Image (tube, rainbow, N blue to C red; front, side, top):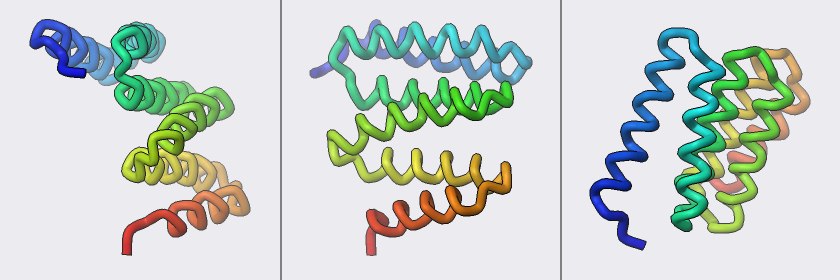
Length: 123
């Protein structure tokens, strides 16, 4: 589906606004904006972009130290990436989840995510 310029610019501005809110510590506002972006992307059939929004939401929950919610959102994105065989998205999701586990010293889970990354990584 080809986006018209106005919609593409709206989505880009929403992303910029959400990141600006993250940079000022307004994490909940950033989540709201990412959620709105995800809803618009879903309505437009932009499934992979909606998955990226899920990753952004998950990362923002991680900044709020809500690890379980962060992982839930990133795993939701991972399912979409897997359905579309989007390796870049899958690798990114596995890496983020692995990093969370590593930082929290949950090394068994970290090694499992690393193994999954290695299985799909090119060459």
